[in-house]
Length: 143
Image (tube, rainbow, N blue to C red; front, side, top):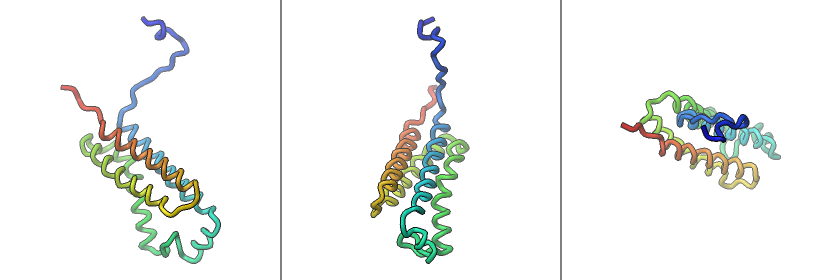
C-alpha cells in the first residue's frame, strides 16, 4: 500500500458519471437564469415598465409570457432528460440544446449596460460550454 493511501486525511474521491455532471450543470444554469431575472427587477424603472405592460422592448402579453415559459422549460427539462434519455440521444440533445442556449445567454446580454447581466451571461455561457464539452466527450464503452 502506498503511503498516501494510508494517510487518514486523504478524502474519498469517486468518479462522477457524465449524466450527473450534465444534470448538475443544467441546474446551475437554471439558478443563474432565475437570479439574473430576479436582480433585473431591482434596476430602476423596471417595475414601472412592468406595471405598464412592457418588458425590455416587448409588450407583456399571453404570447410573450408563453414564449418566455417555453424558452425556460427547455433547460428545466434538460435536468431530467440528461439522466433519463438513452446515452446516444442524451449526448446529442445536450450538445444541440446547450449550443442554442449559449446564443440565448449571449443574446440576453446584448444592449445591457449593467455588469450583473454581463457576468450572469458569461457564467451561463461557460456552464453551457461545459455541458457541450462533457456531452461531446461522453465516455465510450470499451469492447
